[in-house]
Every structure is written in C-alpha cells, then in structure tokens.
Image 1 (cartoon, rainbow, N blue to C red):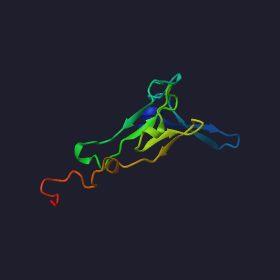
Image 2: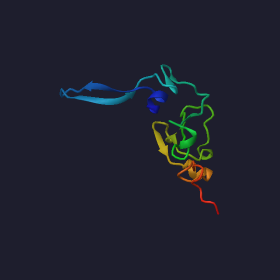
Image 3: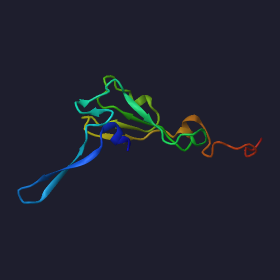
Image 4: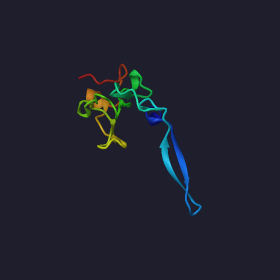
Length: 123
C-alpha cells in the first residue's frame, strides 16, 4: 500500500510471444508521490515517515518507518535514522528494507508500557 502511494499503482503488462504463449512484466503506473507522468517528482522531499495506528499507548509496539525518495535532490543520510527504513539500492532500481532499532529499546521503555497505576513495583 505504501509502495503504491509513493511509486505508483502496481500492475502487469503482458507481451505475446511468437510461440503463442504470453510473457508478463510487473510495472508501476506513473501516479505515485515520488514518480509521476513525467518521471521523478517531488524531488525536494527526501523521504516520508509512515507510522500506522500510532497512539500514545502503543508506542512500544509500533515502529515508524522512513521511506527514502530515490530521486531526492538532497537525500537523507540513512545513518541518522535509528528505526526501520526502506532505502534505494545502489543503482536506484529497487527499494529494500533496512532494519533498525525498536522504539521501546531506543527510548528505554518497558515492552509492556504504559504501566498502569498500581502495577509498578515500588522499591
């Protein structure tokens, strides 16, 4: 869903072969935020952060994911984002996942956060 929004709707193009069998190639429509009818667009946007269903009570269970724009004029440095991200490969023909830190670990929160009143052991 995110890939379609950023790079265009996924589709398939079928090619007939002389043998009568058809071959197909996966394609993307030029209707994404990063790729439009004239090719790369919104090149001033280095990337977008996607964080589905984020609420204060589930921050330890949801990780924000940075999707890089492969055609950004000023690409964002991958080493600055500690969480998961999707980055262009070296020849910018594919977007590949890159693992990152868990939000709970990064902020030092317990996995069962938020701790409800009365649940925390007092020392």
